[in-house]
Image (cartoon, rainbow, N blue to C red; front, side, top):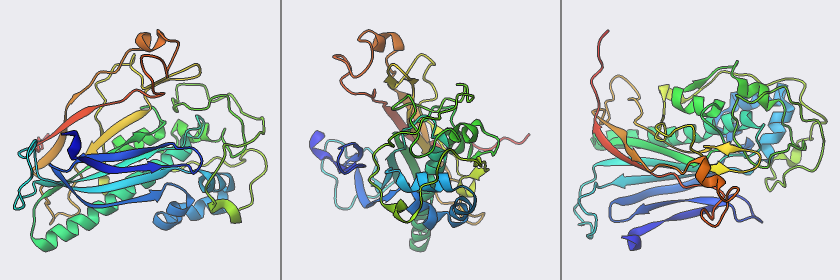
Length: 342
């Protein structure tokens, strides 16, 4: 089985080999296409020009911050032939059952930068939806009714209380969400006490970070033509953000208890790694692209409790050698439930 696993790895920094991978079984899946995009100012300018122009006109700190982050999104379009060929060689005449669009990433890590993660989540999901639009158009031309599903995952660096999480699971995050207030306490060059952590908005946002110090080492050159703003932001960025076409994701880890965590350390403990799935709604009333099928969570592997992780002070440890605990989800496909009239 392991010999059938193929994929690609992605490093998000030139000098620090920190990244992620998309790996799949070649016995079940066929890779149709694969690419990467920076979740930075460059992609914001390209895919969200109005939002980019608003930042340029009124929020120079946030524009500069997005030019300096080095986050990348990796995307793979998979043709799924189902589970009938597990353990055997897939026949050449095998018929595909569906398509799956996979997006993986590692979002910006600074704790107070939850506003940046919300914008990155918007870019990440929008890229996946654009691939969905192109694939559905191609399938319609071919006369195919195969369903297209989405999987979006990564080291997201946000908790379930963050604005980015709300954007993904509810399809929108309002301008009055606390993530925008908290985001005003981060700007490029400010020193905060945590090196990594989630954006749990239950924490007080009254704490103000004021010490100017050396910024996290950037490798992006997008901000070369931008002058770095001096001091903290004077204008807080607040905006209603929405995913395209009523897109909403389900967090497959919803069943985990509050005692679970994927990171555990001195400054922060919690779940900041996530796997989301979605079966997007039809693009129009005349398009019912495989609308009878939807992706669903079949099960999750429980995470160790905080007490278990605390046994060795924190992680990495002799028991858990990584600084993150793996999350594992089993998903399946079922007929979509009929809507119940109220």
